[in-house]
Length: 505
Image (cartoon, rainbow, N blue to C red; front, side):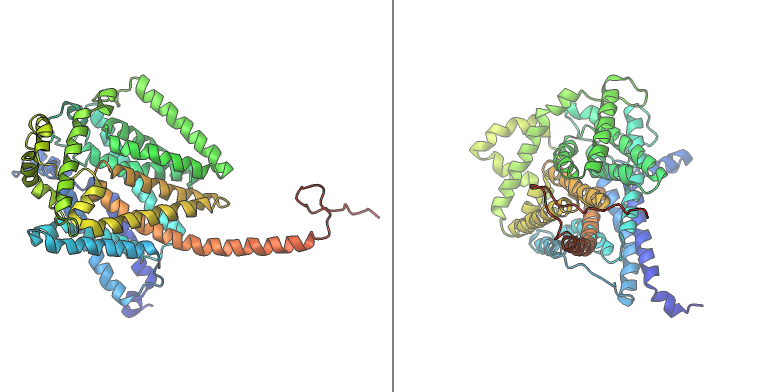
């Protein structure tokens, strides 16, 4: 019979509590917008203002903050009693810490520190998840379970997006105010539970590679089948979303993904089979009329939407104007949107501003941008050049580690596939962040920082096991070479052990 003190100091119990908390956040995060509450309120005729699509980002932020405090505070207090048995010494950990601190320092230079701090609560929440997953003493199997929960949690999100494309709306959806571009009208009908198609596309695109991972290397048959179903639904939802940034990230990530997996013959064959299934699925979507799948926009018009491209280009111009005035300290976290119209007035007063007058009058139409639509540039504008330098250093280290780890584990197919999947999912975030703002959307931002923490745990375990495996293989090669020293070589061929058949007496 364990005493209360022994239960409190039980390392497995605190790890289980933190693990279940992370899994619960992963499973519930895509459904953070309280549209279900609005549905219940309307069903029973209760009074009150609707929440769904009123401020979707704020609703997601509140959910993640509430969940992180509810789970993270007890976990942190418990960890003060039960110290983690191992902590990573990765350079990525220190770069992430210094990057977050540099963004926190930029709060001091914001016009209103309290407002900037409220905006900064989301990065604090995501960074807490990043630290939390590194203290859970995760094994490779448990690490897979966390990612599998994230993949399975996306099934209903993808299915609901496909239902919206066919005209079935179960939640009190209404179009976002201020969306005036014609190319956006059909696209805005597909928002799933996120409130905007770009938001759920930025979340689903990295998970598409993880659904493929579990479909190829799942430990159980049900796991492989459900992951394959999740991947197909996710792929279809990305098609109907019309989000170009996540699709560009997927296409770019597929190049290193195939190159790395082609190093292992077994994975190469499985990848070709999966690619064939994907091609057939695309052909069915484009040429076979399906009752549950319907594009709400013209694909060619969506790809060549010059109006939206010019609007984002104008956002970037204003961002560079802010960066020029606040190069070292930045304008403060969350203050790009606040100072946008002030800098628009300054820029339009210059001779160059006349060239962009039509964008303001015909396309932007007085609607605030919200974000720069470029995570890299927004980090530089709001945090300054120091934050941007640390961010670039973090990504340079991450890409280098990812390629090195994936390319040196070709003899271990499962670990090789996991490392390659990590690399591909991070590539999607990097490319999508150059045209959208996935790291400023609560659900996709929490996914990125959690994946980054899991990557550090994964690499620390792989380094130890790979070193042990290398030493074992090296010792075996030395023994074999000693045995084969007296065996003559024929030409340049490698020597092989020869066995004599025993004579029967």
